[in-house]
Length: 298
Image (cartoon, rainbow, N blue to C red; front, top):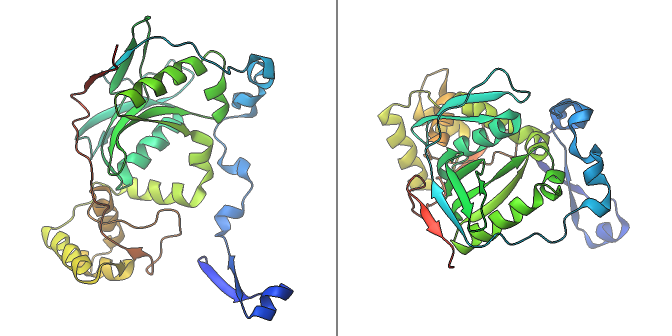
């Protein structure tokens, strides 16, 4: 059976062959070979580029008004789950946040699962901040979180990148980016079609997300920590042996440790017993995302 990892084969190119070199051929997993429409969320009428305000170049925003200095403040939003809106809502308990969070739509839910699973995220909140401007008006980003390398990150989740150039929405994004940059916060644009288009990663994240509350015995935590401290990295099969010896749900225990930032592995590749596992990325920033009140200089 062909490998799903990167394989090296003798080059067929004349120059490469003459040099005795090699080319790398990646054999994708079968799931990546399906038509992109299989993973598309929503019907064709919900794909934003078909909207004439976006298609017509004359309507694109090339310069946005400056709404004056802004202030970003943490807020504690009430949970929102409704049954009368076109976009579905969701609510779930976040292990990293230590509380229940809620959001709207499949793309926000996919982004929440990414933040909950990926060990580069330390903490998170959905709609946990509000930006207000001197000229009036407020904006609530879809998420805010603490990233190990980037520090405090906030941003918006849209189905397609075209939403960010919509003439009604582009000024909001431009002013939010400026205000966030001025107070030392990264503003991130998350595209739902890209999240769902990364099929292997999406499946890995989803499986780990489902397993995030699997019980991890204290002895297993210590055993994994000692294994990685001694060797730096280890195959996933070996990690499963030490974290939950003899248990059928060893993979679920590993997933729970991943969500708890107890280890890390590449979520973009198919997960097998040979997957290389390492320690969680080192946290380089510290901030309480639920107690922020930052203002631009007037």
